Length: 146
Image 1 (tube, rainbow, N blue to C red):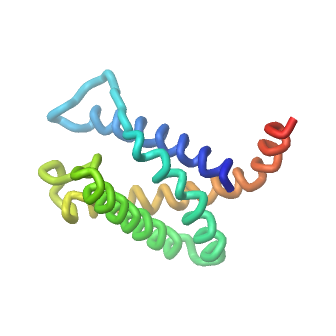
Image 2: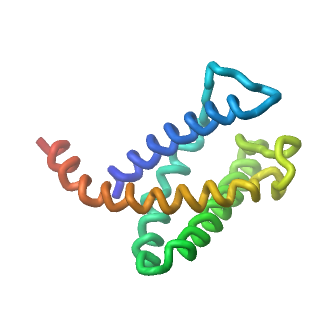
């Protein structure tokens, strides 16, 4: 499980860098073909939590209809985004992804309601990643123990 924590952390960083890079291209105020993406060091452990929270959830709801699973994932990711943003704001005084003034449909600047479809699709995509990593993990552990 710890191996997958690190894989999800790195994968989350990569996805966020691509998301913010392409987002800069689509934003008319900041449009840039340089596709500069970014992330925060805080995000690595937050993305790594997918191993401990998402994987058991996926196993529990695996037989459900895909739209129900998508709804659960979308709500779950948004709840975690809100909770971790609120926690970081309390601990450090700022939330790294504060949406205040940057988005119309946000809750306390911590979560964007218009991102629900993206979170739902990410959750459905992570089902395949989870299944692949479960098959891959024994090989990784064997290679590390050599």
